[in-house]
Image (cartoon, rainbow, N blue to C red; front, top):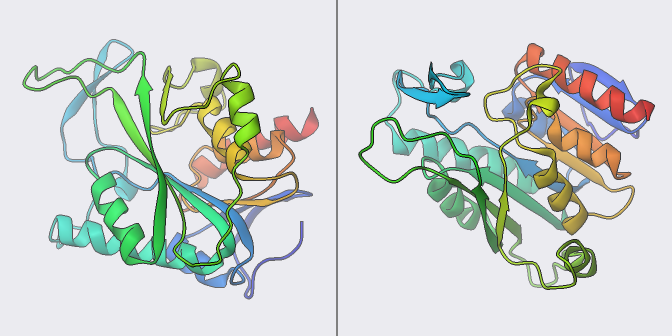
Length: 266
């Protein structure tokens, strides 16, 4: 894979069509050549690690995911969260090609800040995708409706001549010959996709398959600045795209590497 970095980076893994980088996205993104990436998928921290509990596989478990999902002790709540989102989105815009697009997944805890940050940093939102989960965890508190959806924002650079790619025909084909709507229904990540190791916010492969096929062409470069267990990379490689993944957690990159190597061997 061609070198897209202007400065040396802590390369964790490299193959013919993929690279995994161990480090802080705020630092690594500054070292990527401007306007060199075709598409970005980001599943940034939701900032839900607040000491509460939730239900997973029928058991009560802590909502705490790790230090990467917590605001600093000296933070100011929404203001700090919004500064964080504006910062990484600003850096992503610099590395995205003029006709490239960005997808960002989130819950109500973060997605409204992200939507505002996208517009403030010079993006125009194309679609607001609602991912409706068929098997969400139950609401243990019983004081509100069960949280069964996530939002995925799809945006392009807000420039007059930007001509982003959308594979309308493929999406129609995947939807039985009908126009695909902005509500996508499906199950949570299957156990078979978690065999290499667990990540608390791992997305199902069918979501990334649809995103990658909808907005990229064969051989294009996909970037995930918070790549976690590597689902974006798995689907990018499976469908003939190139992939760059960044994560601050070595254990998660090990999971990503194992999953991506299996795809490349097939």
